[in-house]
Length: 182
Image (tube, rainbow, N blue to C red; front, side):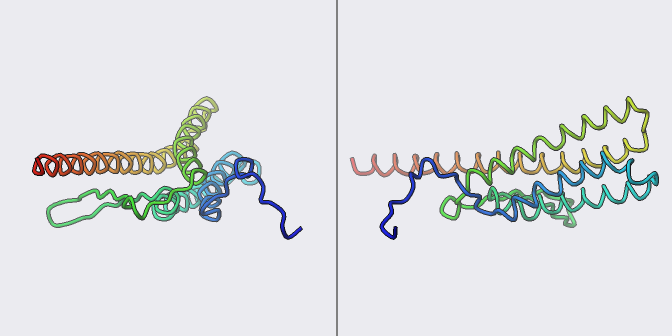
């Protein structure tokens, strides 16, 4: 059996490049949804429910912004405050450093974009149930999730613009070198 041929790579499932990071990227999102939905069953104390969900939302925001984005898709963003005001910074890995796993990337982008949609749906449901206090939790969740959506979408576009600029510059240099040889 030592000489057995490896299985067909096409049939083998692609593994996650960062399975622990992908797990926690999804875990905090799902946990915050579940605690929000089920909190009324376990406690009638709104303050305890509010704190529980908001703590999970903060863990999710921090994990997505500082760990998941960098490791799963090679992007990160932050805000620098100076004497002149605040500056948003967007960063992507250089092409040579970049090795993005397809499953990691799909996990990151799908959950990033689905999260605010689910929270908006839960907000509409809270309005119909006339649970306006729980709407406050939804507003916090939508703001935090949309901040990550905005940051990473802008970061991704910034990366795309940087790539286009590098490609244009490389073509210009190649064309200049070709003309110089003539």
